[in-house]
Length: 466
Image (cartoon, helix red, strand yellow):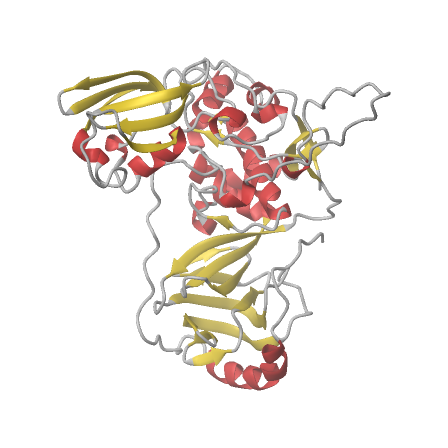
């Protein structure tokens, strides 16, 4: 089993206190379903927004921002200067190690605020260990508790560690490892794999699902693409989702379960149909130059996709820098759209003071994707200035879909009194695979390889484990 670097080693205090903690925790946690909930109930799961900033449909998270490559040294004056390489960003192309089985990925599925708890349960045999276990069979970490069944237990973050049902574990990170035949629930929702509880910098508690990559893709597939889009489109989606998750896992990142990464529904998102599609593509990822790259995708391109280098200002490999025509998404609900926005709407979270008189797009791609947006007052003073996707996602925050700006592929922007009329195309950032376009290609008989070749030119599908 290929594993990735763990976030931290067990704390010295935990090593010393582990035997005593194990006795107490075993006595209290192994009480089956009789374990009482203490203090307050956990914060309900945050409802997923409809914006698509994240790579599952959107923009890069901070962990994916590339560092600048060092400049090559100057050649001696007697030697001709070699031509600069057209593409050499090692941080955006990852060499793929040898895998003998699917690796595990980490997905944050819950986040509580300080003083609020997260409820979890485990059955079929469980162990609680200090630190982050690389997989459920990891036996190198100090064991704090074990049993056959753990009823609803409530965990809170505290200054000295993590308190579970009144017992303080002297660690900022613990793993609840569940046996292969067991079941794990977090706030009532079932997940494959194991649970990592980690104190967050905010003082709250993060619940992270440690899940095998194939199980993760099965929980993502129908959450990201409707099941009626056709098998070939779904196979393309599975390969893209697997590639994206592995790229971030190899960089030590923790994914999220919403559109800031990829929408992940756990066991509730799985079905025999999803498992069949995932199994048909098992171990397959997209590569360029035999290395892994970050695969963006979105709902609807509106006729032409956009380049990640332009939209996100990233150093990305050629497959992500393509802007390709797409004729498969013409019947998508948001292929063409209009929105009427009032000046008052901008004051919500964009312009704290001053009346917006003009919405300006000072920079666009050659095909019309906005790159920058400014809001000006009547004296032409700049009230707001940001990249286009930053503007869209800040504007869309906490708004229902009908009131959102679907994309920054803009046509006309017209001011009429206190109203702006926006005309645009598509839904999402427009980078990478167009999901409705993939559906259209599948309907006319194209297979998953053809779909991927369209949206990620010069890429190649590679199976990295059986």
